[in-house]
Image (tube, rainbow, N blue to C red; front, top):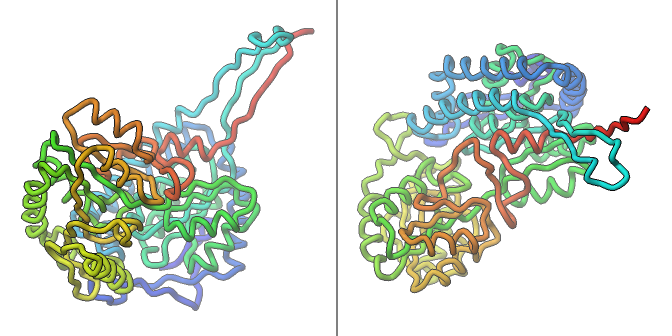
Length: 472
């Protein structure tokens, strides 16, 4: 496939190969952008922004609505592409396509609700004759750097609010999964987005991505990925707005008053979908000692029933991880935990990129799986005696994106809300829950800013204050 620069399709002799994670076979290739291509994309975005800024809200909403319709029309192609380049199961890919269309619909609605408010100047002595208000204006060029795991929907979470706010956009997809972003670029052009306002530029993040990050003409960088790359972006970006979603090591607490069957189902759904490659995947589970055995027995039974294998087969529940290097790393974390005293109750092995759904028990706190982000199909389950201990363990990582707690007591619910150091606390569901309209982002090393369409629009706009002296 060709990349898109200012609405034009561009090819280059140097290529990046895109692999099917399950087998490693090459499914397509994309060009590697040159430094000149990056410059062309920025120049085009500057011109595109002039056009976007003048588009009325109804027109931006119309483009977003048409994008949603075209995504649904291209559902089969997008689904097959997500399966081929990400290794998602067919069902997971279909859900992502439908979700992406919904994000654009939501952005179309929010485009009509961008507004300011009047300011009470007469509340200030000496300002009795002042009247005024503030309004929101688009910020400029938005650089959307997209991860490999949910590449279409998370691209939409950056692109749709940017369009709704009246910005131009440059999309830099992950090198492993660029194809769906290129299809989305085609769709945006068909939907009527001004051509100069959109580029989808492919190539390594270390070169192409960082050249864009450093460019002072780009006003906003919206990035989803690792803490290490996020920290580098902070150092290199210069004076611009940053929205960084940097992952997690998400805990779920199960109290002795919880609905155990519901908790087990949520942990399985939240821990193994997309082979655990979701920032808010359930990774650590803390279960009260009174219900620990019942919970573990039920969890192991359900995990053993997960059908894992070729994601192209409709009966498959879970596919591979993105590449063999990550599969090897994941298994090494299991082995480290085992050497330090943990028990692997089920799973723990791999075949190329296919990592077995795994449950680890009694995992020491000084292991990678308890401290860092696994991004793999496993949960670590430990028991606790009182809620203070569970909350302390939940808070014990450098991350703070989302956490869950299962309880039937209001007092336990409120204690968790007040003391868990996370950007989202989910009651009676797992950390994996997310609705696309809600503010989404984390504390500590989990990032800066918030996604969720309305909240991303706030990040992607500037406030202009108007003050009028009414005296003649």
